[in-house]
Image (cartoon, rainbow, N blue to C red; front, side, top):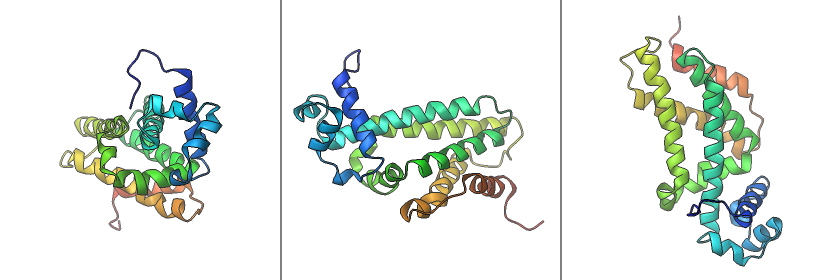
Length: 198
């Protein structure tokens, strides 16, 4: 749950940072509340002052991560002149984030979204906002004649987001290297030039 006051208390911030740190090397289910508290340098009871339980703390970590990433991607896209360039930036940024935060990515792609409660969280709200940003870029590209106006913006949004995840899922699961630039270029070519031989 998000804090209802006007501030984000130091203890709460420490807990969010602690779980974020632990998730870089450990699976969520293997992390105990005692370990989170010890990493944060606070008492275990403080977790329940600010969060319903460990899962609620996780959703707040996701919210913080999604919010920061969404802002970062929008800033990177801002100077780009075309919709296609902006989409390519979004693809590259997403692949890079997934590969640099593999434990976190594995948890998000395979675990969190299998829990119905996730879809009622603020974190999911930010994820939907990210999708709306992408759809807005596509709609702008259609309006400016850069993207075929026969294309359904919502369907293309889903195709792009789905292709990003599937392009890196195997590498994340099996700890394989992913060439972010090459994968980005290939996805962009498929999306905007098609697969039919010329």
